[in-house]
View 1 (cartoon, each protein chain N blue to C red):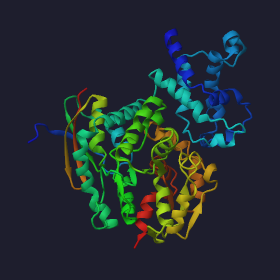
View 2 (view 1 turned 180 degrees about the vertical axis):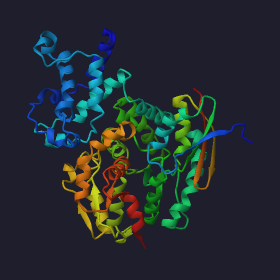
View 3 (view 1 turned 90 degrees about the vertical axis):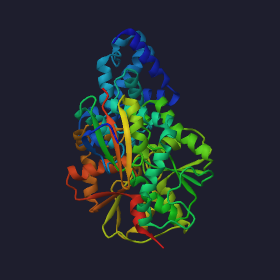
View 4 (view 1 turned 90 degrees about the horizontal axis):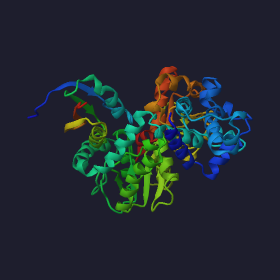
Length: 414
Length: 79
């Protein structure tokens, strides 16, 4: 690595050094309380898979380039020079971390390892060493925003083609469109994913509640956040903000996708609309008497708290409320809520991570799920759903994974 | 009438996000440069995802054909 590249990466590093980040980098006392917090370490006990282990290489670069000790006496130790070896260590650290922040809950200083890993991810982008699949997916989302008009008519046809599947669950009230598009002043803009499964159940629930809603032209997921590139993250999120603002909607409801929800809710400042996760709306509609739910579930069901919806955004009770309307046999995982174990697929690992690592690092999750005795694992995040589906197969847990919205749609009653 | 023939079918029906695009990125190399593959999808989002993916990666979407319950996307490998 030449001096120019070192200088460019040092400049990138500096863009991340806000007050909180300096606190995270300067405060760790190596007490070790984070060690047992990480699902990866609990499944594969190696120090490099602890919060403190992951952060150490970032701290050494911080000391070398931004602290007096590193500038005048780097030979005292605790410093590293920016080079290819460091970038390899950044990659190993950042993409073995799902950004679940369970370690932050246990750290006496509240050190946010996800934030520290965001430095590693940004420098990997700057050095062109990021997972290429994540940068490609990010650029695809940005391009989609730029050429949305070209596909609008065909998208409307594709949406029309899935309407019978919504009607099969719940007949649309007279005078209403089954899946409305481009509705100005709608109460809710629902931002789904590319797959029809993310639209059909939601449409049935909106129609059963007789809500004035409209479907977004975009997918909710923000691959820029997985990648750790703030500029791409902003461009991807801005597509949805521009659409919601143009349509003058009151609420943006994000599909069951944890990162999509948290990024839109927490990283775009004050917005001219409310941001909620769709499961919150389902619970609200039931509590307001707009929908009725039957106890249609005959199997024992448990719930996996998605890290980005629960621990990192505080949505704990709405999913449990819904499941208790659908079942008399709901059981919580132990631990749960802010202490729940990550699924092991967050942070872009489902798209970019290797399968064996994802599975081996989720042994603690598989054990936790099996101990519930439930045969249904409900969740409220596409990423968690994909990962847990794989985990159930890998560890033969004899369980199947379901979205809360899908279960609620099946339970809709007159 | 289309002036191309798909040499391979990629069945991505019912896959979760973002697997259709991830798999397409991985599997495009299964056809030769200049050849056309037929993607089967059930995702409405594929309508815009695949042209955006093609623009990002330098490949080409030749056509999108919709039938009830099925979307066929014809992708030409360019490089």
